[in-house]
Length: 280
Image (tube, rainbow, N blue to C red; front, side, top):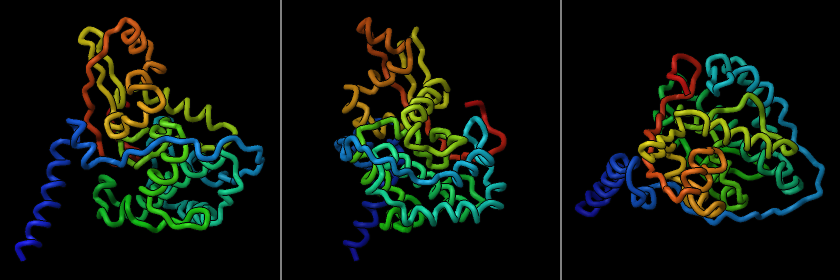
């Protein structure tokens, strides 16, 4: 009995510590955050011209997502049969036959579509975190290309270790205000570079995710950079060096050997539903 009590206390304690330190030190992220992975381009160049049909998802996103990424979930309920058909089509997607960009587009769209379906199944909600943990990111239930994955597995085992592409963190949308905005269109292989670039530029042009105070030499950054800092370090050397490609002021500061201090912005887990929200 004493052992069981100690185990429960340890689990509860870990959860409390993560809640306390999630917005602070790197140690908490290492202990309780997402896994670190080595970013590798696993698929390389491909001359495959095969594509996957994302038109149904594209139509739904265009209809029920606005320009700022807010989602009309209640309207989307009426279109749940269409979303269901798209999700069914993912189960038999010919992943191995697709080219590199088509593969990544498929994985991003699948993650976002599955998340939308998860939200619809659990409405009304104030936050995705109101869904029990066992039914949320680690629920192994989503059929994709002949396999069954959890949302976490799609992100941390299928995407991050196989694509040297940290911009995916601005494309995968966990249905929270603090997440990147959901696009009004599906990702497609032939436009993937343009779409990822657009997403990353949007994030660095809005205060929800990025603020810079030159006088104080302080960069206020989305928690995405805290949780996935290693991904950006692997491709660009540091988080700030990556951001410098999207912020002239950060780039200038780094060139003048002035390293801004970093403050992590609070992550808003409120549902990214259409309605009254502060400006992005």
